[in-house]
Image (tube, rainbow, N blue to C red; front, side, top):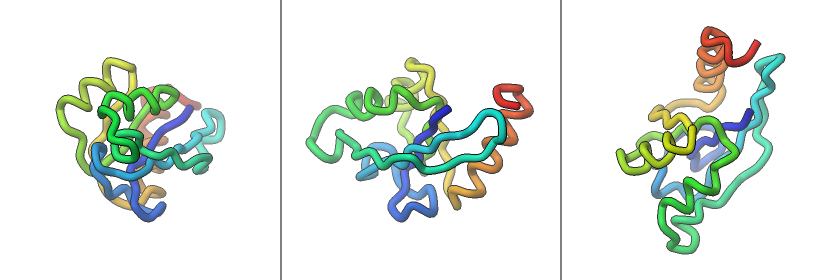
Amino acid sequence: MKAAAASSDGISISEHFGTTPEFLIIEIDGESGTWSIVERRRNAAVECGASHERAVESLGDCRAVFASKIGPHMRNALERRGIQALEITGPIDAVLEKYVAYLRRKRVIN
């Protein structure tokens, strides 16, 4: 499964959904619970002045988005597409460790 993180440095989740220049796309292995950054995706809403809905569309293959802040309009748009909108800050490693543990408790992954 894929997730996206709003990060300015590739180390910490530190950016607001609507203003982050890019999202790190993270692949989470459902068997092992390991993860890796597989792509950097430009935020279309920031890059070319497109609507924030375009940013949501560009993350359609992700199951979750991590950002320091996600406004209610964007949260609703993400959730309508079945994408969890999670407001959190901190090191990507630590956040993903907790997220993988959550997915295991919910039996989403092994």
